[in-house]
Length: 272
Image 1 (cartoon, rainbow, N blue to C red):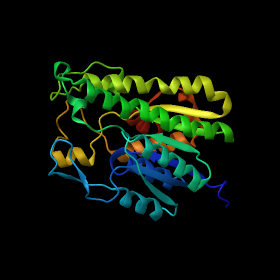
Image 2: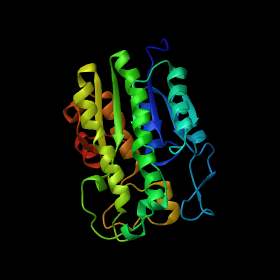
Image 3: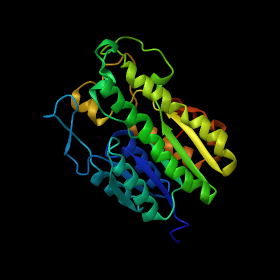
Image 4: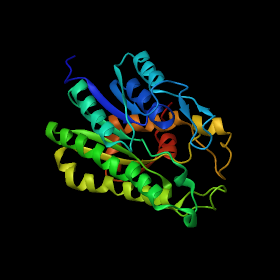
């Protein structure tokens, strides 16, 4: 199979959690996968609240898992607050594979401001949040979208959050989240319908995916898995839905809209 015939994907924020699970699921579906994150080596990641707490996961283990599925994996260091690294990642993935069939916008800015009460917010920190969750995502998507339009096809999956369109069930620490985080995810969520309207005729498939509450490696490391008043899902469940969106024509009923991953996983009888 030639390089242009092979299916390819880029998953951001793929050192652990939903991003890693999505990259593995896409590899299982036959995609070569480029992955990006700040953490290159498993064990090097640290918790944003406790620098002494190691968070499992690294791009090295994600690439190894992709290759274990018989697909090609390639890793790029990317920090959403470093635009040069963002550009280098996208250009590197496009150069390495020659094209991209799927983009999974999963990376987010990890900072304490995401869980900061309104009156404690500091504007420079909010600017960082919007840079990482909105402006960097725009830069990533614009570059990949332009290439996809040029080739006449492509699928973009934007990992959103219910915080963008629902009221918190309680204050921070009791099931709720920070206002600034919700605002940034609300802005990002508006990307999908506009891409669909503007570039659906160009062969671009675009979805938002709401993963719900997912118990990640970080949640387990912090022992916070039970801190929300609702059950949590597994990253592999979300990954299975991402692969389904990338490969199934049945997913087109959700074009331009929001896919509720955990319920869709059950509805479609998917396996993880």
